[in-house]
Image (cartoon, rainbow, N blue to C red; front, top):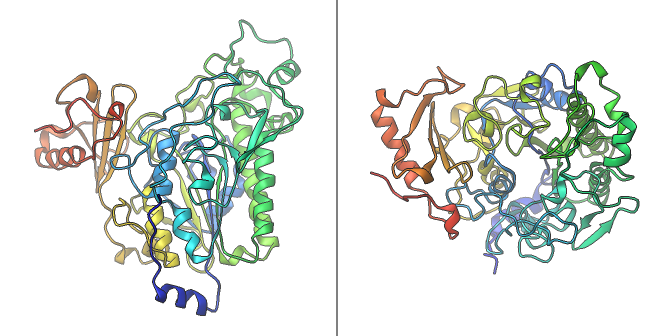
Amino acid sequence: MKRLIPLSLAVLFVIGCAETPPPNIIYILADDLGYNELGSYGQKIIRTPNLDRLAGEGMRFTQHYSGSPVCAPSRGTLLTGKNTGTAFIRDNFEMGGWGPNEPEGQLPLRDSEFTIAEMLKPLGYSTGFIGKWGLGGPESEGHPNNQGFDQFYGYLCQRVAHNYYPTHLWQNGSPDSLEGNAYFAAHQKLDAPLETEEAYYDQFAAEHYAPDKMLESALSFLDQNKKNPFFLVFATPVPHLALQVPVESLEEYPESLDTEPFLGGSYLPHPRPHAAYAAMITRMDRDIGTLLARLKDLGLEDNTIVMFSSDNGTTYSKGVDASYFNSVGDLRGLKGSVFEGGIKVPFIVKWPGKVQRGSTSDHISAFWDLMPTLADITGAEFPADIDGTSFLKTLNGKASKQSPTKPLYWEYHAFGGMQGVRMGDWKGVRLEIRKQDDAPVQLFNLVSDPNETTDVASANPAIVAQIRAIMNARTPSERKEWNFLRESNP
Protein backbone atom coordinates (compact mmCIF):
# COMPACT_ATOMS: atom_id res chain seq x y z
CA MET A 1 0.00 0.00 0.00
CA LYS A 2 1.11 3.55 -0.67
CA ARG A 3 2.32 5.61 2.24
CA LEU A 4 -0.17 8.40 2.82
CA ILE A 5 1.43 11.78 3.44
CA PRO A 6 -0.80 13.94 5.61
CA LEU A 7 -1.60 17.52 4.61
CA SER A 8 -1.67 20.18 7.25
CA LEU A 9 -4.70 22.43 7.48
CA ALA A 10 -2.33 25.37 7.23
CA VAL A 11 -1.22 24.35 3.73
CA LEU A 12 -4.82 23.95 2.61
CA PHE A 13 -5.68 27.35 4.04
CA VAL A 14 -2.78 29.09 2.30
CA ILE A 15 -3.66 27.59 -1.06
CA GLY A 16 -7.35 28.24 -0.66
CA CYS A 17 -6.82 31.88 0.23
CA ALA A 18 -4.06 32.71 -2.23
CA GLU A 19 -4.84 35.43 -4.73
CA THR A 20 -3.08 33.48 -7.47
CA PRO A 21 -3.43 29.75 -8.05
CA PRO A 22 -0.47 27.45 -7.36
CA PRO A 23 1.97 27.30 -10.27
CA ASN A 24 1.61 24.78 -13.06
CA ILE A 25 4.72 22.64 -13.55
CA ILE A 26 6.04 21.20 -16.82
CA TYR A 27 9.16 19.05 -16.63
CA ILE A 28 10.62 18.17 -20.06
CA LEU A 29 13.04 15.26 -20.11
CA ALA A 30 15.19 14.42 -23.14
CA ASP A 31 16.70 10.97 -23.56
CA ASP A 32 20.50 10.60 -23.97
CA LEU A 33 21.00 14.31 -24.73
CA GLY A 34 24.56 15.36 -23.93
CA TYR A 35 25.67 18.38 -21.91
CA ASN A 36 26.85 20.28 -25.02
CA GLU A 37 24.02 19.41 -27.41
CA LEU A 38 22.03 22.63 -27.02
CA GLY A 39 23.07 25.95 -28.51
CA SER A 40 22.85 27.58 -25.09
CA TYR A 41 25.41 25.03 -23.82
CA GLY A 42 27.86 25.50 -26.67
CA GLN A 43 26.54 23.33 -29.52
CA LYS A 44 27.68 24.62 -32.95
CA ILE A 45 26.03 22.23 -35.42
CA ILE A 46 22.62 21.20 -34.04
CA ARG A 47 20.01 23.97 -34.03
CA THR A 48 17.87 24.33 -30.87
CA PRO A 49 16.30 27.83 -31.08
CA ASN A 50 13.35 27.19 -28.76
CA LEU A 51 15.40 25.69 -25.95
CA ASP A 52 17.97 28.45 -26.39
CA ARG A 53 15.14 30.96 -26.01
CA LEU A 54 13.96 29.13 -22.90
CA ALA A 55 17.45 29.50 -21.42
CA GLY A 56 17.39 33.20 -22.27
CA GLU A 57 14.09 33.59 -20.46
CA GLY A 58 15.15 31.59 -17.42
CA MET A 59 18.08 30.12 -15.52
CA ARG A 60 20.73 27.84 -17.01
CA PHE A 61 22.43 25.46 -14.56
CA THR A 62 26.06 24.51 -15.20
CA GLN A 63 26.51 21.92 -12.40
CA HIS A 64 23.38 19.77 -12.69
CA TYR A 65 23.42 15.97 -12.72
CA SER A 66 21.09 13.22 -13.84
CA GLY A 67 20.09 10.45 -11.45
CA SER A 68 22.02 7.70 -13.22
CA PRO A 69 24.07 7.13 -16.37
CA VAL A 70 21.19 5.08 -17.85
CA CYS A 71 17.46 5.52 -18.39
CA ALA A 72 15.24 3.67 -15.90
CA PRO A 73 17.09 4.37 -12.64
CA SER A 74 17.55 8.00 -13.67
CA ARG A 75 13.79 8.40 -14.10
CA GLY A 76 13.21 6.65 -10.80
CA THR A 77 15.44 9.07 -8.91
CA LEU A 78 13.71 12.02 -10.55
CA LEU A 79 10.26 10.91 -9.43
CA THR A 80 11.10 9.63 -5.93
CA GLY A 81 13.80 11.96 -4.63
CA LYS A 82 16.11 9.02 -3.89
CA ASN A 83 19.57 8.42 -5.33
CA THR A 84 20.66 5.02 -6.63
CA GLY A 85 22.21 4.15 -3.27
CA THR A 86 18.79 4.11 -1.59
CA ALA A 87 16.34 3.76 -4.50
CA PHE A 88 14.56 0.54 -5.45
CA ILE A 89 15.41 0.84 -9.19
CA ARG A 90 19.20 0.96 -9.54
CA ASP A 91 19.75 -0.17 -13.13
CA ASN A 92 17.86 -1.13 -16.26
CA PHE A 93 16.26 -4.55 -15.75
CA GLU A 94 14.23 -6.12 -18.54
CA MET A 95 11.03 -8.06 -17.89
CA GLY A 96 10.80 -9.44 -21.42
CA GLY A 97 12.64 -9.96 -24.69
CA TRP A 98 12.82 -8.26 -28.06
CA GLY A 99 10.13 -9.96 -30.11
CA PRO A 100 6.71 -8.45 -30.90
CA ASN A 101 4.91 -10.87 -28.58
CA GLU A 102 7.24 -10.53 -25.59
CA PRO A 103 5.95 -9.01 -22.32
CA GLU A 104 6.57 -5.27 -22.23
CA GLY A 105 8.32 -3.31 -19.54
CA GLN A 106 11.19 -3.07 -17.12
CA LEU A 107 11.29 -3.91 -13.40
CA PRO A 108 8.28 -2.07 -11.91
CA LEU A 109 8.67 0.75 -9.45
CA ARG A 110 7.16 -0.60 -6.23
CA ASP A 111 3.71 0.46 -5.12
CA SER A 112 5.21 1.62 -1.82
CA GLU A 113 7.45 4.19 -3.52
CA PHE A 114 6.19 7.78 -3.21
CA THR A 115 6.39 9.94 -6.32
CA ILE A 116 6.21 13.66 -7.06
CA ALA A 117 2.83 13.07 -8.70
CA GLU A 118 1.49 11.56 -5.47
CA MET A 119 2.98 14.45 -3.54
CA LEU A 120 1.15 17.05 -5.62
CA LYS A 121 -2.23 15.38 -6.03
CA PRO A 122 -3.50 16.25 -2.51
CA LEU A 123 -2.98 19.91 -3.45
CA GLY A 124 -5.43 19.59 -6.32
CA TYR A 125 -2.93 19.07 -9.13
CA SER A 126 -3.86 17.13 -12.24
CA THR A 127 -0.93 14.92 -13.16
CA GLY A 128 0.24 13.64 -16.52
CA PHE A 129 3.19 11.68 -17.88
CA ILE A 130 3.71 11.66 -21.64
CA GLY A 131 6.60 9.96 -23.38
CA LYS A 132 8.92 7.14 -22.33
CA TRP A 133 8.27 5.58 -18.90
CA GLY A 134 10.54 2.55 -18.30
CA LEU A 135 9.43 1.92 -14.70
CA GLY A 136 6.87 -0.85 -15.19
CA GLY A 137 4.84 -2.43 -17.94
CA PRO A 138 1.11 -2.96 -18.51
CA GLU A 139 -0.91 -3.97 -15.41
CA SER A 140 2.17 -3.73 -13.16
CA GLU A 141 2.40 -1.84 -9.89
CA GLY A 142 4.88 0.43 -11.61
CA HIS A 143 2.41 1.62 -14.25
CA PRO A 144 2.16 5.45 -14.25
CA ASN A 145 -1.52 5.32 -13.31
CA ASN A 146 -0.46 3.39 -10.19
CA GLN A 147 2.24 5.92 -9.36
CA GLY A 148 0.10 9.05 -9.07
CA PHE A 149 -0.35 10.05 -12.71
CA ASP A 150 -3.91 10.66 -13.83
CA GLN A 151 -3.00 10.47 -17.50
CA PHE A 152 -0.32 8.56 -19.38
CA TYR A 153 0.46 8.36 -23.07
CA GLY A 154 3.54 6.89 -24.69
CA TYR A 155 5.96 4.00 -24.37
CA LEU A 156 5.69 1.92 -21.23
CA CYS A 157 8.65 -0.20 -22.34
CA GLN A 158 12.14 1.08 -23.12
CA ARG A 159 12.78 -1.75 -25.58
CA VAL A 160 9.73 -0.83 -27.65
CA ALA A 161 11.00 2.76 -27.57
CA HIS A 162 13.99 1.72 -29.69
CA ASN A 163 11.65 2.06 -32.69
CA TYR A 164 10.07 5.47 -33.35
CA TYR A 165 7.46 3.81 -35.58
CA PRO A 166 5.92 1.26 -33.16
CA THR A 167 2.73 -0.65 -33.79
CA HIS A 168 1.19 0.97 -30.70
CA LEU A 169 1.67 3.33 -27.82
CA TRP A 170 -0.21 3.22 -24.52
CA GLN A 171 -3.09 5.45 -23.46
CA ASN A 172 -3.32 4.81 -19.72
CA GLY A 173 -4.02 1.08 -19.47
CA SER A 174 -4.97 0.43 -23.09
CA PRO A 175 -2.87 0.13 -26.25
CA ASP A 176 -3.38 2.86 -28.83
CA SER A 177 -2.98 0.99 -32.11
CA LEU A 178 -1.11 3.07 -34.69
CA GLU A 179 -2.81 1.90 -37.86
CA GLY A 180 -0.37 1.81 -40.75
CA ASN A 181 2.64 0.97 -38.57
CA ALA A 182 3.58 -2.65 -39.24
CA TYR A 183 6.03 -4.37 -36.91
CA PHE A 184 9.72 -4.48 -37.82
CA ALA A 185 12.70 -5.25 -35.59
CA ALA A 186 14.40 -2.24 -34.02
CA HIS A 187 17.89 -3.76 -34.36
CA GLN A 188 19.01 -4.63 -37.87
CA LYS A 189 22.25 -4.58 -39.82
CA LEU A 190 22.78 -4.21 -43.54
CA ASP A 191 25.62 -5.87 -45.42
CA ALA A 192 25.79 -2.92 -47.81
CA PRO A 193 24.05 0.45 -48.14
CA LEU A 194 20.64 0.51 -49.78
CA GLU A 195 20.57 2.09 -53.21
CA THR A 196 18.51 5.16 -52.30
CA GLU A 197 17.52 7.22 -49.30
CA GLU A 198 13.90 6.44 -50.12
CA ALA A 199 14.65 2.74 -49.71
CA TYR A 200 15.68 3.34 -46.09
CA TYR A 201 12.43 5.14 -45.39
CA ASP A 202 10.41 2.40 -47.09
CA GLN A 203 12.06 -0.20 -44.86
CA PHE A 204 12.59 1.64 -41.56
CA ALA A 205 9.70 4.10 -41.29
CA ALA A 206 5.91 4.03 -41.24
CA GLU A 207 2.88 6.28 -41.10
CA HIS A 208 2.92 7.44 -37.47
CA TYR A 209 6.03 8.93 -35.83
CA ALA A 210 5.76 8.37 -32.07
CA PRO A 211 7.02 11.83 -30.98
CA ASP A 212 4.30 13.44 -33.10
CA LYS A 213 1.65 11.44 -31.26
CA MET A 214 3.19 12.39 -27.91
CA LEU A 215 3.09 16.07 -28.79
CA GLU A 216 -0.60 15.76 -29.68
CA SER A 217 -1.25 14.17 -26.30
CA ALA A 218 0.72 16.87 -24.44
CA LEU A 219 -1.20 19.66 -26.17
CA SER A 220 -4.46 17.92 -25.31
CA PHE A 221 -3.38 17.65 -21.66
CA LEU A 222 -2.81 21.41 -21.53
CA ASP A 223 -6.18 22.10 -23.11
CA GLN A 224 -7.98 19.81 -20.69
CA ASN A 225 -6.30 21.23 -17.59
CA LYS A 226 -6.13 24.94 -18.33
CA LYS A 227 -8.48 25.78 -15.45
CA ASN A 228 -6.71 23.83 -12.70
CA PRO A 229 -3.09 23.42 -11.55
CA PHE A 230 -1.21 20.63 -13.30
CA PHE A 231 2.05 18.73 -13.21
CA LEU A 232 3.13 17.38 -16.59
CA VAL A 233 6.23 15.30 -17.31
CA PHE A 234 6.97 15.39 -21.04
CA ALA A 235 9.59 12.64 -21.42
CA THR A 236 10.48 12.65 -25.09
CA PRO A 237 12.44 9.58 -26.28
CA VAL A 238 14.66 11.86 -28.40
CA PRO A 239 17.55 11.60 -29.21
CA HIS A 240 17.90 7.98 -28.03
CA LEU A 241 18.60 5.62 -30.90
CA ALA A 242 17.38 4.40 -33.37
CA LEU A 243 18.17 7.10 -35.94
CA GLN A 244 14.67 7.75 -37.24
CA VAL A 245 13.18 11.10 -38.20
CA PRO A 246 10.65 12.19 -40.84
CA VAL A 247 12.28 13.15 -44.10
CA GLU A 248 11.15 16.80 -43.96
CA SER A 249 13.20 17.24 -40.80
CA LEU A 250 16.19 15.37 -42.21
CA GLU A 251 16.24 17.73 -45.18
CA GLU A 252 16.76 20.70 -42.86
CA TYR A 253 20.40 19.56 -42.65
CA PRO A 254 22.76 19.43 -45.64
CA GLU A 255 24.10 16.24 -47.16
CA SER A 256 27.61 17.56 -46.49
CA LEU A 257 27.28 16.56 -42.81
CA ASP A 258 27.79 12.91 -43.77
CA THR A 259 30.46 11.05 -45.67
CA GLU A 260 29.23 7.48 -45.16
CA PRO A 261 26.05 5.68 -44.04
CA PHE A 262 25.52 3.82 -40.79
CA LEU A 263 24.82 0.16 -41.59
CA GLY A 264 23.22 -0.61 -38.24
CA GLY A 265 23.75 -3.56 -35.93
CA SER A 266 23.14 -2.34 -32.41
CA TYR A 267 20.33 -0.14 -33.80
CA LEU A 268 18.71 0.53 -37.17
CA PRO A 269 20.80 1.75 -40.12
CA HIS A 270 20.52 5.20 -41.64
CA PRO A 271 22.00 6.69 -44.83
CA ARG A 272 22.82 10.05 -43.19
CA PRO A 273 23.54 9.42 -39.49
CA HIS A 274 24.93 12.86 -38.61
CA ALA A 275 22.03 14.68 -40.27
CA ALA A 276 19.49 12.29 -38.75
CA TYR A 277 20.80 12.79 -35.22
CA ALA A 278 20.84 16.57 -35.58
CA ALA A 279 17.39 16.55 -37.17
CA MET A 280 15.92 14.47 -34.35
CA ILE A 281 17.08 17.03 -31.79
CA THR A 282 15.93 19.99 -33.88
CA ARG A 283 12.52 18.39 -34.36
CA MET A 284 12.33 17.79 -30.59
CA ASP A 285 13.16 21.47 -30.10
CA ARG A 286 10.38 22.39 -32.54
CA ASP A 287 7.90 20.26 -30.61
CA ILE A 288 8.92 21.92 -27.35
CA GLY A 289 8.39 25.28 -29.01
CA THR A 290 4.89 24.19 -30.03
CA LEU A 291 4.14 23.09 -26.47
CA LEU A 292 5.33 26.39 -25.03
CA ALA A 293 3.36 28.34 -27.63
CA ARG A 294 0.17 26.51 -26.60
CA LEU A 295 0.93 27.37 -22.98
CA LYS A 296 1.11 31.05 -23.95
CA ASP A 297 -2.05 30.89 -26.09
CA LEU A 298 -3.96 29.48 -23.12
CA GLY A 299 -2.81 32.36 -20.92
CA LEU A 300 -0.85 30.01 -18.64
CA GLU A 301 2.72 31.08 -19.35
CA ASP A 302 3.08 33.53 -16.46
CA ASN A 303 2.03 30.99 -13.84
CA THR A 304 3.89 27.94 -15.15
CA ILE A 305 7.32 26.63 -14.17
CA VAL A 306 9.03 25.00 -17.15
CA MET A 307 12.07 22.79 -16.58
CA PHE A 308 14.20 20.97 -19.12
CA SER A 309 16.92 18.34 -18.67
CA SER A 310 18.21 14.97 -19.92
CA ASP A 311 18.26 11.56 -18.28
CA ASN A 312 22.00 10.96 -18.92
CA GLY A 313 24.80 11.87 -21.28
CA THR A 314 25.20 11.09 -24.98
CA THR A 315 25.25 7.42 -25.86
CA TYR A 316 28.39 5.45 -26.68
CA SER A 317 26.43 3.24 -29.10
CA LYS A 318 27.43 3.09 -32.74
CA GLY A 319 25.25 5.31 -34.88
CA VAL A 320 25.82 8.40 -32.74
CA ASP A 321 29.05 10.34 -33.23
CA ALA A 322 29.62 12.20 -29.96
CA SER A 323 33.03 13.47 -31.05
CA TYR A 324 31.66 14.96 -34.28
CA PHE A 325 29.07 17.00 -32.41
CA ASN A 326 31.34 17.67 -29.40
CA SER A 327 28.35 16.30 -27.49
CA VAL A 328 29.86 16.41 -24.00
CA GLY A 329 32.74 18.77 -24.74
CA ASP A 330 35.93 17.59 -23.08
CA LEU A 331 34.11 15.84 -20.25
CA ARG A 332 35.26 12.30 -19.57
CA GLY A 333 32.89 9.45 -20.36
CA LEU A 334 29.51 9.03 -22.04
CA LYS A 335 26.25 7.29 -21.18
CA GLY A 336 26.90 4.29 -18.93
CA SER A 337 29.67 6.06 -17.00
CA VAL A 338 29.70 7.87 -13.65
CA PHE A 339 32.39 10.17 -14.99
CA GLU A 340 31.09 13.66 -15.82
CA GLY A 341 30.18 12.97 -19.45
CA GLY A 342 27.74 10.25 -18.41
CA ILE A 343 25.82 12.17 -15.74
CA LYS A 344 26.36 15.92 -16.12
CA VAL A 345 23.39 17.25 -18.07
CA PRO A 346 21.83 20.54 -19.17
CA PHE A 347 19.16 21.97 -16.87
CA ILE A 348 17.04 25.02 -17.65
CA VAL A 349 14.31 26.54 -15.48
CA LYS A 350 11.88 29.26 -16.54
CA TRP A 351 9.51 30.73 -13.97
CA PRO A 352 8.26 34.19 -14.94
CA GLY A 353 8.58 36.77 -12.18
CA LYS A 354 10.53 34.38 -9.95
CA VAL A 355 13.60 33.25 -11.89
CA GLN A 356 15.81 35.99 -13.32
CA ARG A 357 15.80 36.03 -17.12
CA GLY A 358 19.07 35.01 -18.75
CA SER A 359 20.67 33.99 -15.47
CA THR A 360 23.22 31.23 -14.89
CA SER A 361 23.77 29.17 -11.75
CA ASP A 362 26.71 27.00 -10.72
CA HIS A 363 24.68 25.48 -7.88
CA ILE A 364 25.44 21.75 -7.63
CA SER A 365 22.21 19.76 -7.95
CA ALA A 366 20.79 16.45 -9.14
CA PHE A 367 17.52 14.81 -10.14
CA TRP A 368 16.61 13.82 -6.59
CA ASP A 369 16.57 17.51 -5.62
CA LEU A 370 13.43 18.08 -7.70
CA MET A 371 10.98 16.59 -5.18
CA PRO A 372 11.99 18.80 -2.21
CA THR A 373 12.20 21.85 -4.50
CA LEU A 374 8.66 21.40 -5.80
CA ALA A 375 7.48 20.73 -2.25
CA ASP A 376 9.11 23.98 -1.17
CA ILE A 377 7.35 25.83 -3.98
CA THR A 378 3.88 24.35 -3.47
CA GLY A 379 3.78 23.62 0.25
CA ALA A 380 3.47 19.88 -0.35
CA GLU A 381 4.79 17.31 2.10
CA PHE A 382 7.24 14.53 1.29
CA PRO A 383 8.84 11.56 3.07
CA ALA A 384 11.77 12.14 5.38
CA ASP A 385 13.91 9.42 3.80
CA ILE A 386 14.63 11.10 0.47
CA ASP A 387 18.13 12.23 -0.56
CA GLY A 388 17.39 15.58 -2.16
CA THR A 389 17.85 19.19 -1.09
CA SER A 390 15.57 22.02 -2.25
CA PHE A 391 17.21 24.56 -4.54
CA LEU A 392 14.32 27.06 -4.37
CA LYS A 393 16.54 29.81 -2.97
CA THR A 394 18.81 29.45 -5.99
CA LEU A 395 15.80 29.84 -8.29
CA ASN A 396 14.71 32.93 -6.40
CA GLY A 397 18.11 34.57 -6.75
CA LYS A 398 19.09 34.01 -3.13
CA ALA A 399 22.06 31.76 -3.76
CA SER A 400 23.89 33.13 -0.71
CA LYS A 401 21.11 31.69 1.47
CA GLN A 402 20.90 28.38 -0.38
CA SER A 403 21.28 25.29 1.82
CA PRO A 404 24.48 23.37 1.06
CA THR A 405 24.01 20.45 -1.28
CA LYS A 406 24.37 17.03 0.30
CA PRO A 407 27.08 14.90 -1.31
CA LEU A 408 25.75 13.42 -4.56
CA TYR A 409 26.00 9.65 -5.01
CA TRP A 410 25.62 7.36 -8.01
CA GLU A 411 26.08 3.67 -8.58
CA TYR A 412 25.79 1.68 -11.79
CA HIS A 413 26.03 -2.06 -12.19
CA ALA A 414 27.24 -2.72 -15.73
CA PHE A 415 30.87 -2.76 -16.85
CA GLY A 416 32.03 -4.38 -13.63
CA GLY A 417 30.13 -2.03 -11.32
CA MET A 418 30.96 1.57 -10.49
CA GLN A 419 30.30 4.29 -7.93
CA GLY A 420 30.61 8.06 -8.08
CA VAL A 421 30.43 10.81 -5.43
CA ARG A 422 30.39 14.59 -5.88
CA MET A 423 31.35 16.28 -2.60
CA GLY A 424 31.78 20.01 -3.06
CA ASP A 425 34.65 20.54 -5.51
CA TRP A 426 35.72 16.91 -5.23
CA LYS A 427 34.65 13.93 -7.35
CA GLY A 428 35.43 10.35 -6.40
CA VAL A 429 35.02 7.35 -8.71
CA ARG A 430 35.43 3.61 -8.13
CA LEU A 431 35.44 1.20 -11.08
CA GLU A 432 35.13 -2.59 -11.55
CA ILE A 433 33.92 -3.11 -8.00
CA ARG A 434 32.76 -6.65 -8.80
CA LYS A 435 36.24 -7.68 -9.89
CA GLN A 436 38.23 -6.69 -6.81
CA ASP A 437 37.53 -6.71 -3.11
CA ASP A 438 38.88 -3.23 -2.48
CA ALA A 439 38.59 -1.16 -5.65
CA PRO A 440 40.56 2.08 -5.28
CA VAL A 441 38.93 5.50 -5.21
CA GLN A 442 40.09 7.81 -7.97
CA LEU A 443 39.88 11.46 -6.90
CA PHE A 444 39.51 14.58 -9.02
CA ASN A 445 39.22 18.27 -8.20
CA LEU A 446 36.50 19.52 -10.56
CA VAL A 447 37.50 23.15 -10.19
CA SER A 448 41.05 22.68 -11.44
CA ASP A 449 40.31 19.50 -13.42
CA PRO A 450 36.68 19.53 -14.67
CA ASN A 451 37.43 16.80 -17.22
CA GLU A 452 38.73 14.31 -14.64
CA THR A 453 42.12 13.79 -16.23
CA THR A 454 44.37 13.64 -13.15
CA ASP A 455 43.84 11.33 -10.19
CA VAL A 456 44.97 13.13 -7.02
CA ALA A 457 43.88 10.46 -4.53
CA SER A 458 47.36 9.77 -3.20
CA ALA A 459 47.84 13.43 -2.25
CA ASN A 460 44.48 13.70 -0.45
CA PRO A 461 43.94 10.64 1.78
CA ALA A 462 41.52 12.44 4.12
CA ILE A 463 39.20 13.41 1.24
CA VAL A 464 39.41 9.88 -0.16
CA ALA A 465 38.41 8.48 3.24
CA GLN A 466 35.34 10.74 3.36
CA ILE A 467 34.26 9.76 -0.14
CA ARG A 468 34.84 6.06 0.52
CA ALA A 469 32.66 6.35 3.64
CA ILE A 470 29.85 7.85 1.53
CA MET A 471 30.20 5.04 -1.00
CA ASN A 472 30.14 2.40 1.72
CA ALA A 473 27.05 3.94 3.32
CA ARG A 474 24.83 2.84 0.43
CA THR A 475 21.79 0.80 1.41
CA PRO A 476 22.17 -2.78 0.14
CA SER A 477 19.67 -3.56 -2.59
CA GLU A 478 16.98 -6.20 -2.23
CA ARG A 479 18.21 -7.57 -5.55
CA LYS A 480 21.53 -9.41 -5.31
CA GLU A 481 22.57 -8.32 -8.82
CA TRP A 482 22.54 -4.73 -7.58
CA ASN A 483 25.01 -5.29 -4.77
CA PHE A 484 28.79 -5.19 -4.97
CA LEU A 485 31.42 -7.79 -4.16
CA ARG A 486 31.94 -6.31 -0.70
CA GLU A 487 29.37 -4.01 0.87
CA SER A 488 31.94 -2.39 3.15
CA ASN A 489 35.63 -1.72 2.71
CA PRO A 490 38.08 -0.55 5.38
